[in-house]
Length: 339
Ligand SMILES: [Zn+2]
Ligand SMILES: [Zn+2]
Image 1: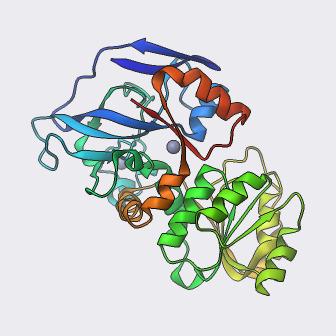
Image 2: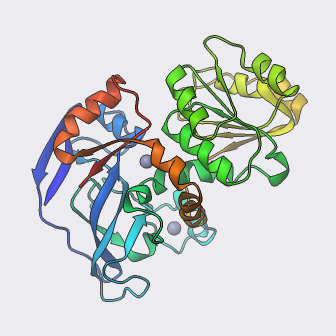
């Protein structure tokens, strides 16, 4: 079968490899769509913590079940599924609390013996598959994983802080977070970014207000528009000053959730943080509850999510699409492969 490799940094290659074997608790998925993640671009730069070239890229997949392990009872042949690409022990204190990202035995496609997901057929533990309803296409199903990153963050925000939310960063995750927030009933959804095209796309797809922080002071712009600061913030991207900016923008007792992986130590304004009595959460990956919420959101906000998929290409275009994404030579929200 075909597989898409980062053969060396910045060097994509299609290789022929055997179709994987499955264990009794696994299914074999015929991959139909595989999204390209920001973390796949880290592999391109050889800056990923555990996916080191040569490695098969990809982990954001949806497809059809074509083979069942002997012990699988929750799926049948022909089911269309999205995949939660994180295998775990299922027994530790973290797994029992639906916090799989903290399982000491967790592993993901492209790690250890599990191949990356940008392949024609992928072996997946049946418990990690989520059946797509008839009205959610398999293509939309491949958005489930990046959407779950956004939803995991948004679900940390208490109900009484959902009156206003600011997404700092309107790239793929910020954009999906805007749509998800709309579907989850958040009011006054604001985005900030330094790229006008990203902001325009977010406004077209569910955001109420956008601020280009290159041209405007974030705080001033929001206070001018709404007469007050925001109750919640999701940090999906940002420079070194992103914590300072978020604490300056948060309303008293508000809630800030950080997803961004801005490297290095960031300045943290302790006194303003204490004054606001705000809460800062970290958000990593996702869990079963997030995936279930995502399936519902995909259905509810179908047409908006469709618009978030800007590029669909065959495996053969791997080099070209990675170069485009890395060089930002075209406007992109989410790019995916069609296998
Ligand atoms: Zn991803
Ligand atoms: Zn575990």
